[in-house]
Each structure stands twice: as structure tokens, then as C-alpha cells.
Amino acid sequence: MSDTSTRPRQPFARSLPLAAPLRLNRPSDTWFKPALSVVVASAVPHLTLLALGRLDLVMYTMAGSLCALYGHGLPYARRARTVAGVVLSMTAGLAAALVTASLTHSTAVLVAVGALLAAAQKVACDVVRIGPPGHVILTFVSSAALFAPQRLGQVPAHLALTLGAGAVAWLVCVGPALIRREGPERRAVARALEAAADRVAEPGPRTRHTAAAAVHAAWQCLLASGRSTPVRRSLERLVVHAEAAGASAQPGQDADRLRAWAALTRARGPVPEPPPAPGTAAELYGIDAERAELRASGGRRAARRTLLRSLGPGSHLLPVAARTLIGCALAGYLCAALGVGRPYWAIVTAASLYQANTTLTWNRTLQRTLGNLLGVLVFAAVLPLSRTGPLALVLCCLFFSFAAEALITRNYWLGSVAVTPMALLVLEFGGTHPAGELVGDRVLDTVLGALAGFLAAALVTNRRATGRVERALEAAARARTDAERAYADRARTGPDGLDRARRALTARLVELREAADIAAGEWWQRALPEQRLLAAERAGHRTLAATAQRLGPPVRAPETRRGAVAPAPANGAA
Image (cartoon, rainbow, N blue to C red; front, side):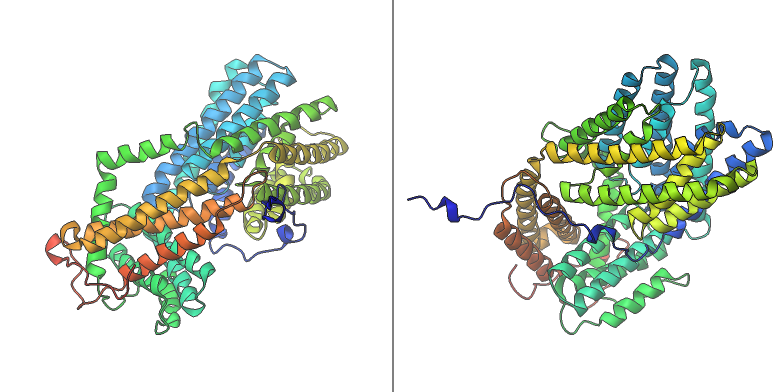
């Protein structure tokens, strides 16, 4: 007789939380940076248009100003390229929307184009991992522009305004490099030290993964920062200490010392100089070699190939793109059928919901709906004040821009309470509208957009999530084998080969945990290989710990290969 009735099964639809998604978190340690940046980047064009008496053009300059929200966790060399790319992407999406709006007034066509743009923007932002606020800002601008009155001859001038405001946003984002050139790297290294201290103080799977992810992020930040400087060299030495402490977590490690270094690193004073650790010279030689390889043409070609593979037919991003396309189209058509003249907010609401899996999408649905409905009440309260004069309207918009970024790191719904009145006040620049109509349309758009968006997420399956876990398991196993081989043959591979293999293993373990977390919250798929996941993570971290325990006397930090020495045998088998 078959025993299939007694076998554990993967649940089709997981339980959906109600209270947890609405709890407030600690604010981000850099919440004020995007908040202040977007205010400064918006104030310059807003006040210029106010002086010229052309506040009706604010929508086009605001598209460029909102680019100041991006790139604040990146080193300045990478940030300059990233924000420039965001400005060009914003302008391209706006151009497509404006041209479409000037050629047709068909709501069906406009909704279809809005859904296509939203899906493309979602995929593009996920591929490059641009981070918050992701595709939502791009979709907000392009969807709003689709339903704005437009003539084809006006498009070039309006795009020029966006590019001009985007240039101001670029200067605001990159300008702090003149004051504190290594600020982003210092914050990334401080986070790695803090995570390593938590790992030492409370050893466990959660702190182990957090420490590995923070160290990996710190190395990536340092690799992307450009040429080496004395400050960056000191930061690299600190990451070596964090990596060793986070990998081994020996009881004798000093968590308080790591936290003290983190506080000094985050502060404005000199970077602390840690005592030389065994293997530091080899580690620094390894990162120098890796940085040189990334700058070479071969490294850039490899990065492009990796990017193209993420867009292939088997990509795990395709189901999310399908959800975005279907959900945004369904939301727009539902609102249009119910008489909403410009259903762009329903498209934006649906687009903003899509996260890595269905459970996270449900969380965002709750947060977005609650925040928008409360935000409508805030808008109704401040509308009389904003209509006292043009300056009052500009100041209200700047205030809500700051409040949105200040609150959104506490919880998305709290930030949405400020985003909603800001978005509604932008409509006031083009002329006053009946308050009841604005409030009613926004409530209807929010509810229908949230329902349609989550319905698409629930019905469009993502069975590739488990397949991604399988591929991540294989990649982690290969990386662990490469690290063990590099350690065994360190006399041949050299310190740069060993340290590159260790960093590759760390990256694969971080990706494995990310893939497992995403699949764990997805519906309609086969069971996850929990035991294989646990075994792979334990084996990988044992290999990291073994290769981190380098013995031998401290050596000088090498500026040439002569200063590097091969690490001594590790204590314990990998």
C-alpha cells in the first residue's frame, strides 16, 4: 500500500500575516541622505519655475529631481555612473510616455503602454539590482505622463527640463565626494564590523549569514570604489578582521573591540588602524588583483555576459515581469471601466506591490493600501493650506518629499502616508481640481490596484523559484570545491587566487540564502530541499572558517607581489 498520504507536502498557499508587515522598524542609518538629497534636487528647479511663473512644468522637472533618490549606498565612482544611468532611463521612459500621449487618447492603448513600461522597468531594475526605490519611481513618472495632455512638438522641451533637473540631481548625489570621498565605503565596512561583532556575541545561523552578507557587501563596495587610497587600504584591513571574526566566531574574539572600530569607522575622524592580522597582506594583494581584473576589458565582458544570462529564457525574473504586466494592465482597465478618467495611480499601485515572492508581495499590498488610504486623509487636511499660494504649494511638496524618505525606512506604509499627498499635490501645479474627485479617484485606484496586483501575483505561478535554489546549490558546491582546491594548491595559485576563491564562495552562499528565502515565500511549487540547503550552508561556512584561520607572523601590506605570502595550513578540515 502506498504511503503517499503520510509524506510531508509543500503547502500550495502559505498563511498570510496581517500584523507583522505593519510593525515599525528601526530607521536606516542613512535615511537622511536620500531625504535631504531629493529636497535639494527638487528645490532648485521648483523655485526656478516659481520665479518664472511656470509651475505647470513641475511634473517634467520633478522626473529628473526624483533621480536623487538612487545610489546612496554606492561608492562615489559607481554612484556617478548609476545616477547618470537612472537619469537616462527616466528620460527614456518619460519620452515613450509623452510620445504615446501625444499620438493617442485611447485609454486602452495608454493602459497597455503603461503596463508594458512598468514590466520593463521592473525587470531592468531587478537585473542591475539598483536597490530602493527601484522601479516604482520610474513607473510613477511614466504612468502619470501617459495621462497628461501633450502635443508632439512639446516633447523635446519637456525632456530637456527632465535632463536639466536630472543633472542637478546628479550633482547633489555626487557632490559630497568633495567633502568625504570614502564615506560610502566607511559605512559599508562599519556594517560589516557590527555584523561580525553580533556573530561573535551570538553565534548562530542567522548572525552567521548576516555577517557573511555584510562582509561580502563591504568587499563589493571597496572593489567598486576605484583606485586604492590610504583610507581604503585601512578599510580593507578592517574587513579582513571582520571576515575572520565572522567566519570563525571563536569565543576569544572581542565583540566590543569590533563595535568600537565600527563606531570610529562610521565617524568623521581617522579610520582606526587595527593590529596586523596574519594573512592581511595576502588578502589585500588578492583584492588588488581582483580590482585590476574588474577594470580590465575581460572583466567587463564577463560582467556583461552575466547580465545577459539573467535575462535568458530560464530567468527567474520572467514570472515577476509577467505578474507586473498582467497586474498593471488589469488594474488600469478595471479603473477605466469604472469611470476613472486617468487611472495611472492604479497602475502605479499594482506595480509597487511586486516583490521577490508572493508572501512579500502580500506584505507590500497591506502596506501600500493602508499608507495610501491614510495619505488621502492627510492630503484632504493640507489641501486648503497648499491653495493659499504658489509658494505654499511648493513648500508642501518639498516637505512631503522629505517626510516620505524619512519615514519609509521605518515601514513602507508609513512612507506611503507622505508619498500620497505629495503625488496628489503635483496635480495642483497644473490647475486646481475638485477635492472630492481627487480623493474619490485615489481611493478607488488604490483599492482596485491593490486587488488586481495581488490577484496577478497569486495566479501567475513562479515555479522557477525552486529551480533557482537547485542552481544556487550547485554553484555553492562548485565554489566550495574551488576554495578548497585553491587552499590546497596555494603555493601554485598564490594569495590572490585563494582570496578570490574565498570571496566567490561568500558570494555564492549569500545568493543561496537569498534564493532559499525567496522560494520559501512563494506559492504553487514543489518542496524545497531543506536538508541539502542546511548541509550546503554549513559546509560552505566551515570552508570559510578553515581558510580564514591563517597562521604565521604578520607581514607587511604588499604594494607589490613580493610582500605577499601564502597562508599557512588551517586548523581543521574544510
